[in-house]
Length: 346
View: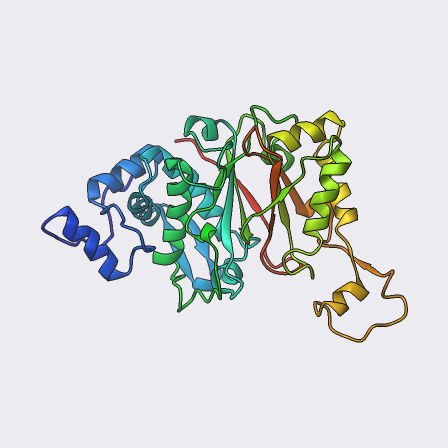
C-alpha cells in the first residue's frame, strides 16, 4: 500500500485558525469542517483498507479522477468516523458511474441532491437511521456520510454554487440526503436485493433527486386506499413530463396497512404506474406540454415514468403516524439513473 499522501500541506497555528482557513479557502459547505490532519486522513484510509492513490471513480464530464485520499480528506472534514468511509466510497463510485451521469445532476438549474439509500448489515452496524425523523437531524452517520459526498462534489469535482453548480433553488437535501431501509420490520424484499445483490451484502443506492414530498392518509385500511392518495399527489408532482425515476418511502403505518392487504413492492409499483398517468389535455391546459388541444387529448395518457421499475419502493420512517413520502428524480427520460453499489469490506 502506498504510504505517501499527495495532498498539499498547510501549516497553521491552532484548530480555530484551521477551521477559519477552510472557510476562507472555500472548502466548506457553509458549516464548520474538521481540519483534515494527516493522522485523521490515514485513519480513514486504514479503516477502508485503501491506498491513498487508489482510484475510486472517474467523472468523465469533468475529466476528474477521484482518489481514495481525496475522498478520505473530505470525509474527515464532514465529521465522518473512519468506519463510515466504505459507505462514502461506494456512494462516490455510484455518482461516478456513467448511468448516474454526473454532469447533469451536478450542474443543472433544477438543483438535484444525491439521495443515498443504505441497505444491508452495514446500515445497522453504523446506526444509519431508518426510522423516526428519517430525513431530519440526529444521526451522525446519515448527516456526515451525505455531507462527505457533497464535499467531494464541491472540492474534487468543482461543483460549487454559482460556478459549475447552477441550481436555481436547490433544496436542504443537497447538504446531506441519506437514509437506510428498515429491513428489520419490512415485509418486503430489500431494495439492494431487488437490484441484484445478495441479502447479506451491504450497498448504497444513489439517485439524483428533488426534495421529499410528504403525504398523509389516516382514513384508509387498505393498500388501494393509501396508494390512491399517494398516486393523486405524485401525478401532479415534479416535472411530470418524463422524469427518469421516483422513490417512494413508506413509513410504519402505511407499510403495515399495505402489507396487510397482501401487496408487495411489485404490486405497489404497478398500481402507482397506472394511477399517476396524466392526459395530454391536462398537461397542455397546465402548460406542461406544448401544442394546441387536439381531438383525443382527453383520453391520450402519458405515464409519469417509462416503466413501473422506475419507481423505487423503500420501507423506512417512523412506526407511528400516517405519513409517507415520495421523491421525484432529476432530469427527463433516461438522463440520470439510480445506481446501486456494493459496499466493499476491508
